[in-house]
Image 1 (cartoon, rainbow, N blue to C red):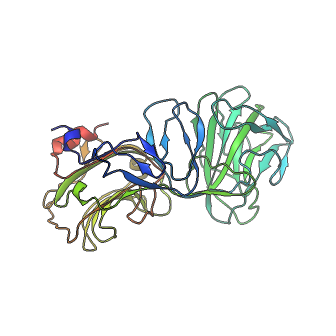
Image 2: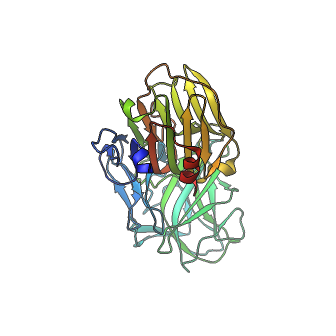
Image 3: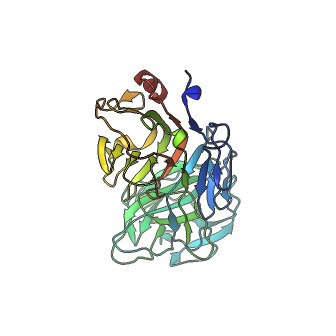
Amino acid sequence: MSDFEDAKLILTPNAYKAGKAYCIKPFDGSGDLTVVRNTTATRVNENGLIEVVAVNVPRVNYPIGGGCPSWLIEPQATNRYLNSEPTANESSAGNITYEVFVWGQTIFTNCVRFLNNPAGVFRYGGTTIASTQYTISAFVIMDDLSAPVVSTSTSGGDFTLVLSGLIVSNPAIVENYGNNIYRVSGTGTTGAINLINNGIVKYAGHSSKGFRVVGWQLEQGSYATSYIPTNGTAVTRNADVFSKANVANLIGQTEGSIFIDFNYKKTDPTDNFICVLSDNSGSNGIWIDVNTSGAFLIIVRVGGASLITYTILGASFLFGRKKIMLNYKSGNTSLFINGAQIGATSTTSFTFPVTIDKINVGSYYNGAGVLNNEINDFYLTTTRLTDAEAVKKTTL
């Protein structure tokens, strides 16, 4: 049989409306997922334009430079800059100007202008907490249209990122958004003082290149999430929660297969759930997640006990595109990731004592533990597929 014929539920990034992500199967709409995010949010649309979407509207996000879209599922985050597109100083600043500037295919219409100055150029904003991890990000256009080089010192490169007066020493991430626009981001831990000195600094030892900056974002955590506009106050974007209850007929109660194709970015200090099938509790079901230690876990849980657990360690394994299939059946459960079987086939027997009837994609059964994640494809079968089918389906 084909994947389409086997599947009881298929979710791909296609049709949606406020509060709903439509599934390709089942045809009658009984499997369509409920989507909750009680704030606006941004996405990249099919034209490469950053745009704001309304409350509870699922985000079909397109990759920069083109390609197939994904469901964008993110945890709650707060932009601590009071004005993400500033036209005046928020905290201390030196040798900068503010300009009206059209940023091509983005929502921005202004910028902070950085020109070369031997006395140094800087702009700070936002307020942080001491000894806490934050990520600072912004959109940059260099005057010579080159890719910006973010330095980790007062020399070399074009500028530095600074948190609580300390230069971010971890290598920055530089993403090309097209039209010579780059989003730069860096993560560091704040010191005990200078908690309002968060921003960009161009030291005398950096290059002589000028540049423009907009879309300033300062958020707690280990990675930059999607852009959160602010205008006079800090703004929180709520988490995206995709779920569906009372669908026992779509979930294999004694056997089945779970397939998920996703782009995993970075973990945060809580469990990050990729998908969960449950009885709306933490006692029974199957879940795929990344724990607080960065271990990738697949668990079959019965009566509060983890009867089958696959654990994959190593940060290098986590990030990037993953295709996962768990073929489960009492006495015959196996895991496949990116075309290879992971670990041995489990011969552990199990029987769920209650009906498993709830699906969460990108979060725990109660909506916690939301990923910084892009879901490309998700489907369920109620019969266990063969291991050969799993290898074929999960090969990148």
